[in-house]
Image (tube, rainbow, N blue to C red; front, top):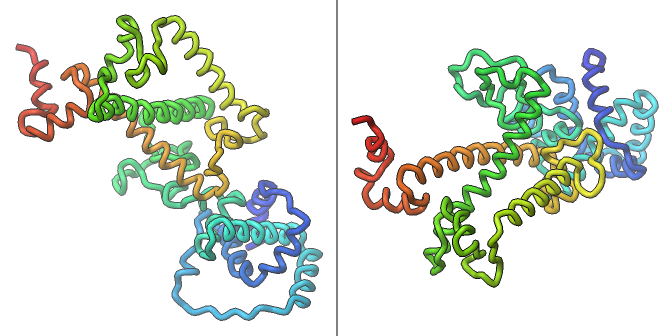
Length: 345
């Protein structure tokens, strides 16, 4: 097992972080809790499929463990460090990671901790196995018999669909991936922004519908929240200039990872650091899940924005007003009723 997968373990060890001086004492103090978890992590790292063998934990068989005295534990740890330093360092790393996960989550869930530890140590297939890897959902489900070889499930939102081969080139794929995520983020903001004026109008404001809001600058100017004392924009040139400057600075800030140079190997789409004030990326497994949620909601928001555009052209109304009209009379107020207006006579 170990020799046949030496290359896999070498990659995991190289990708792990530096061992702090306290790691030795920490590994001894949590040895009783880590021993079984480390064994499962070993299965994760040596498995040819890269899947977490969590069935061992859920087998339902009672397990009885006896904690060895600290003296014999220390002797065993020293002997293990001399016999195989590389394997020992990997085990110490696993123990340290599992300890930090337990502190962060506030619970000791061995199955969950083993998966998250394998994810942090470089086994990407263990990072939320539901949405990554070979066994991830495909866009045709059980009816899909072929998936392009370059779509390996490494990135979030990969359902194995690329009929046009747009992602066959790695450089092109990287650009498209970044473009999709950024557009998805803007679409999520835009979809909410298009509804927001109509919501405020129900609260007593008098704001134009989203597709007419920009045109008011050529009339009396744009008032933020209908109050000219807050923002009263009257110059389209000034707005464009500020937008270009602010957006250019924001993109440069993101691409370079914030005020400092971005760390080596970091992803420009998820720079972290100063751009992650809530620390959402600290837990690698949860971060992998958040990436999937982001891309799925971003794709839905882009589709929603396309619907907003079509609605505005077809009805001349905002999304909330269209929805209210449809709920009041779904039989006659729907997409099919408006589609017949554009049929040739």
